[in-house]
Length: 206
Ligand code: ADP
Ligand code: NI
Image 1 (cartoon, rainbow, N blue to C red):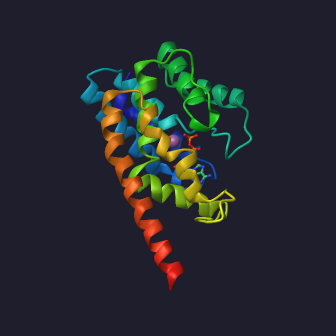
Image 2: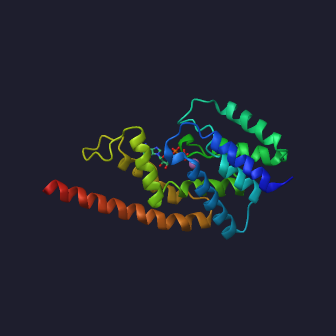
């Protein structure tokens, strides 16, 4: 099997199946998750690079938030596609497992996680925090027309999403390297919130 040829096909498949997502879930999210995942893999010195790369590229296919596509349909689509590339059944199963179970919004943690699962999940979570995470959050909030902030506390605001999810991610990291990378990005979330509240109060006093 020729790896670089396959990866090109998988990239094309990932691009084609992004669907009509918000632009926080575009091709560049997949590129960033792949890069984060490789960085973690190298620092940790473990994980199968083939599974990690394919799982990173395909982790958001069929995201239930955007499409009402059943998980079964997605698994079948992925299975058909990956089998056509003549990948090992073991690789295919793991990639599909990661696709099905990775998402924060699915809320439940699988009973056992492979090192590849842990790395790709950390890589995806890193992209939800720090400067990029903030950009993605406000992009998503704009996409669904949520308020940026509501000082009265009724809350579907994007700032409330920081408390619902973003500020929790640092402590949910699976790997030591993921935790280290998350630390810096977490501090930036806090710094950003501090400045945001500072400006908001100042504006109110005018
Ligand atoms: P996951 O793929 O881990 O389930 P989501 O699909 O829930 O993650 O979120 C993808 C991106 O959209 C993340 O950057 C996340 O912070 C952002 N996002 C999700 N829900 C909201 C929300 N209610 N307000 C702002 N951003 C959101
Ligand atoms: Ni993702």
